Image (tube, rainbow, N blue to C red; front, side):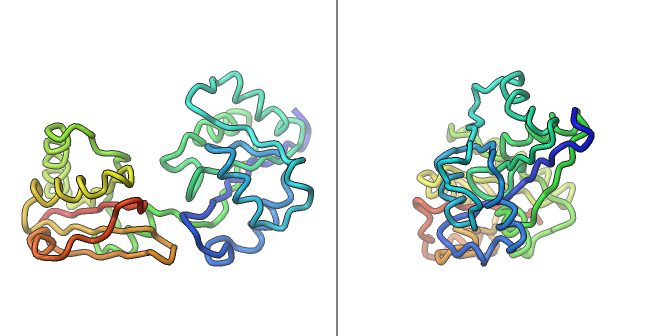
Length: 239
């Protein structure tokens, strides 16, 4: 390893179509634009993000390694090896903060094993932004990723999460594939208790942002919000 190893920079990307100055500080933009090597969940998304930054070199000279599910630890370690020679590397997610509900955590774990500095940069996290805006318990919360796709299994899981929320006073949080948002909302309204407070956080930080929290009983009497094709978080807190 070099006497002065490089730094793994964890750089957030946007959650949707919004000006970069709205969600990423200028210093982070400058760092992002100056790096020549990236590891990304999605290479196309990473390059679209880099076009928004003040690039220090042509985009085609920036190497982007795509961290797909088939990339093994040995390959990932090889990609990170320049850190040990003193070169900085950027890590980006497909949306929001890298290594949070994101495969980039694997790269961060290797960097720590090597004693390489890891620097997280401030930027948008849909999970935290939705929690902030929900009015639900922000001290005890759990993010579950995706709920089961099968309707019966999903119903059982929602009830289990609701029981845990009631016992622990814990906010439950999860996401859904955008085209299934409508089915998810219908399932929530069918299986959660009327007193449970439910928050829907749609397209956070974009022009289509819409966030509202109501008891399930009140949601049932409201017009169904337009959620199709919109990234959405669902949060609830049982009474």
